[in-house]
Length: 252
Image 1: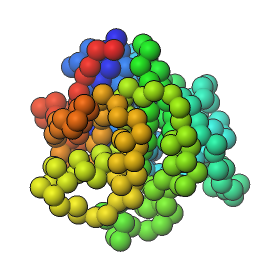
Image 2 (image 1 turned 90 degrees about the horizontal axis):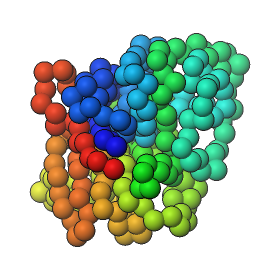
Image 3 (image 1 turned 180 degrees about the vertical axis):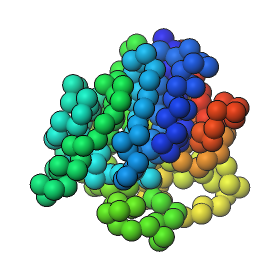
């Protein structure tokens, strides 16, 4: 089984198609900032012969919409559970008008797209893949809460407790941001912001110590070996003519 990990695509969904075509992938796992966004999410088109695409939360996401996935039938997303393995969900109250707006979403060819929310475990060929999304936005000062920024970009305490209580062995971790100690290695010891998600991921690393860890968020490309773990930080997808610095394919 060929599994292709993809960095930030920010709504450029042809990046998924290009990765599948280039890598001859059986499964795609995307590391957050997938591209579900207000006034743009109706343009989602992933036409890839029904190859499954799994993604975690980024920081630039329409989090209020992602929160509705288990609650409402959203176009052809209604055909399967959006969570590979959900934590205990905190449901939110939405007005009828807002619900009706959300139900207008049209994910064309979208039955194969799965949100793996924080704490989800996906098992592929006997390998456990843990998803821990989210990150603090460096630009949130310039965004508006509920319109272009959402507090769900940070992990909640119950999510963190759920993740740390998991007892399954973890082979691969997929996160949006890498842990703080990896960010420091990439930026020569400098942290642009103090991100509580990146700090929490240091604790996650110490608990699980997976063989592989994939992330995006930094719009950078790096492979860092730390102790017995290979960290693959994937660049973002800029366009079809770019080299494949936003993907990494492995055999499972």
